Amino acid sequence: MCDDKLFASFTCQRCSQPLKLEDSLNSFSEHISAELNLPIHSQPDVELESQATSFDHYVPPCRLSDSGNGANGFMLISDENEVDLLSHQFKIKAALFDHLSGSSNIDHPLCEECADYLIELLEQQLEITQNDYDDYNKHYARLQNENDEPKLQDLEKALQDVNEETRRLLEELEALQNEENETIKAIAEQQDVSMRIAQEEDRYWKEYVRHKRDWLVAEDEGKSLDYQLSHVNNQLDKLKRTNVFNATFHIWHKGHFGTINNFCLGRLPSAPVDWSEINAAWGQTALLLSALARKIDLTFERYRLVPYGNHSYIEDIQEQKELPLYGAGGFRFLWDTKFDNGMVAFLDCLQQFQAKVEELEKNDKVFCFPYRTNKGKIEDSDHVSYSIKIQLNSEEQWTKALKYMLTNLKWGLAWVASQFSSDGEEISLNL
Image (cartoon, rainbow, N blue to C red):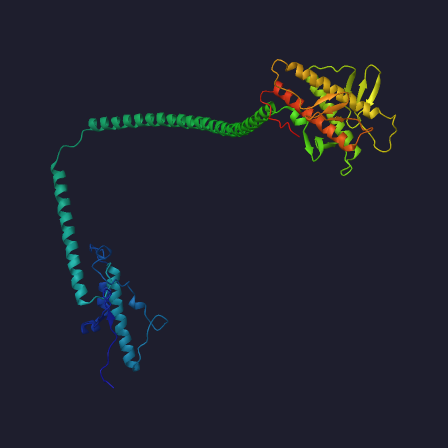
């Protein structure tokens, strides 16, 4: 164990290096401390903060005299007599350094290098202060040498000018304030106008959108109407090119039967046809001949066709009786010939129609019906006659006579279509 005893030391307040104090500080007496506590005048202040770049490590000042055996102090461990001595010396040194730190802006203690650097800073500060002092003295001397003091009249005039300028500036300020008030008022009016314009613009755009929507709807409706008109015109052209007789009465054949609008006219033992269908076919046939006669202004002699569906009949004008164009089938008496008389009368009307058409074509002699009719019979190209009556006739003969009759009607329909419709559809005349 070393016998040398190390006394407590201090650290530099700038670089925080440990310091070993001179032994002469141990003999620092209370009288010297009292003299040092006297106030110091005209001591230059050194601004350490302005030299912050020079002090790399700045340590905040601490009051060494406040250290003790409390929570923030320390305790020396040694012999009791040595502890008292060291504590007394430490307090004296701490009081000295606290006094030095409190008398200036520099914290003590400092090491030798930091003290030298601080002396250099103080010398520079002193030089700057001396230069400022010399400049102030020169300026003061120049002012002392100048005897041209301003006159009272000049000062009063200058004061009057200042007052006039102040008054003018106050008037200008008042005018500017009035102008500002007018400007604020004008701004408020313009804001009201702007708000009204914004409302008008909003209303305009709403009306624009509404009218735009109405216009689009109207445009769509117009296009739709154009399409409808185009379709209607196409249908009209088609209807103009279509003969009403061709569209209404379709005469064709189904095996051995002649048909009108798909109704068979006739009966065969091998293919019996219901009488309701035969009656309906006779009704369509009567309607067709009546329409064709009316088209060429033909009035039948002795007879008047009365189309009445499946109960159509022919009115005998001379005898004033009705001849039916419908039958019921079943057993028939030899003297029950009304239906036969009605069919003979119809064939007579057809013969009058053929004669009228051939009369109209007598100059051209181009059109001619394929089958001739005479007194209830119809004759083919081989000069074979077929009776249109049921009595004393076979169903095959009767059916063929009806088929030839429908063929003549089809030829008559084609002739009327060619006379009254130049664009009429072409009709197949052969059954």
